[in-house]
Length: 123
Image (cartoon, rainbow, N blue to C red; front, side):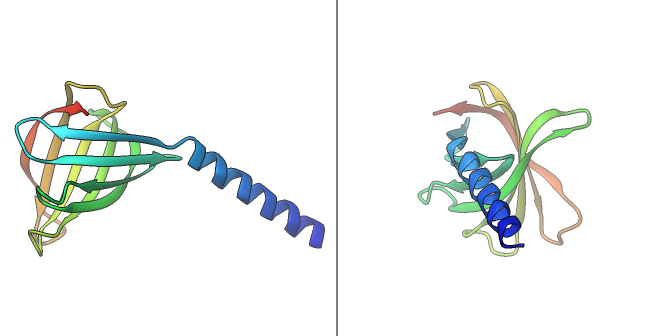
């Protein structure tokens, strides 16, 4: 029993260190807006932080393939400057300058509307 637990712990540590080693970090600037998101991807999970001088948004999400859209990074964001407004940022992936984004907003958590869209630049 102890051997099984030790092997399980070793496998967990190895998988976690592999995910950290494979981390992909990019700064994405939404063209025409002040937003520059510092995005970190590890194992398909994503976290993001906007520059504090802009909106100070932060959140997390995942890399996924979306029907009719293709492969994307989808982030749920909370904006410190807009309490009560939740945002969802969808970025084309893999990241490349000229990629597209769509930013959706909701105040009730159910009905999202398109707030912004355009292209982004990889900094």
